[in-house]
Length: 130
Image (cartoon, rainbow, N blue to C red; front, top):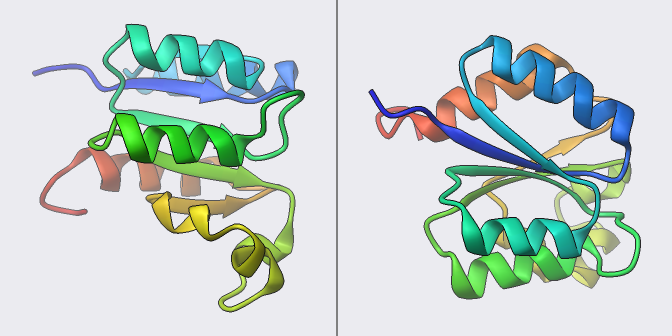
């Protein structure tokens, strides 16, 4: 069985390392990037199945990364992680201002629960569940 490769693009280094540890204990191959430039570099080099993407990143935003993935790496699934409660609200200003959120496979608001993240990853990595 092929292992699922996950890239975490998040500027909160502590959260990245905690997520990495948990995901690796579940058997996933995990890399991290602490900014969009590092994330874009990694996306272009390695064959990831899923990206966990923060929207608020220093420099280039997560929205720009999401747009790039949509235009260039179509099969890659993206779980957006956001601290904005409006990102999940249907018809909210956030989605109106950022239509690129439609490119995400899922949007999870911070703080999120680890079981919720694991379930979403399992769902997206299992073709019968997605």
